[in-house]
Length: 232
Figure 1 (cartoon, helix red, strand yellow):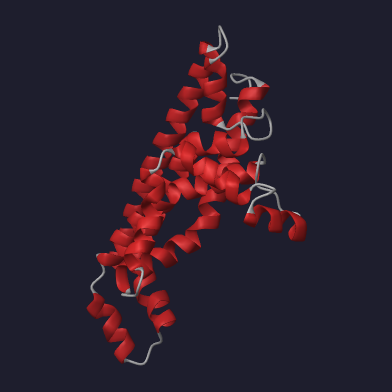
Figure 2 (spheres, helix red, strand yellow):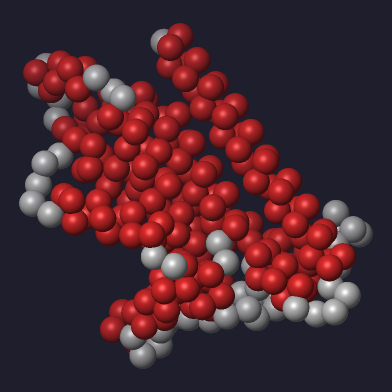
């Protein structure tokens, strides 16, 4: 593939994989926690939390990117503190692309995991609790193994969504070749240049291949884990 793609194209592919991987891994623990809260807990503000989680699906991606820029930019309330106190910068960095991708993919991850949790019979968890198991132990030994296929499916769906994220990313971190230019941004850039259709098509084929691989892998892993759990 290194011979088929130019160095600039290859950098865009590698950066997209890097951004998507970090976006998925960093948001997965929070995704499991939020999904469990929404599926099993009743608390004031639950509907507000549910709305905030799904808001990126409804808002235009450019709006999400602009809000990220206002919040996590160097002069933003959060970005300013992170920059001055910890030296962490998100705006116009690949880390910002990962943050934008994570936020855009988070609703899909939470939804997949929440559906898996809701499919678990609460009586199984209650039975373990009556035997003296604490809530964290019940979750770790009963709930988590049963929802593992849903977690895997949610993570891979989030990864695929992160790979295709464009609007929020380009608004928050721009389109800097070699630094913030992800696969969708590179396709967009090539389409703005006369004669760039061939390069754009190569990247489109790469994007399709990665997306199909992610979906097939999600299906295969989920079924394998489900069969293992059923066998136990």
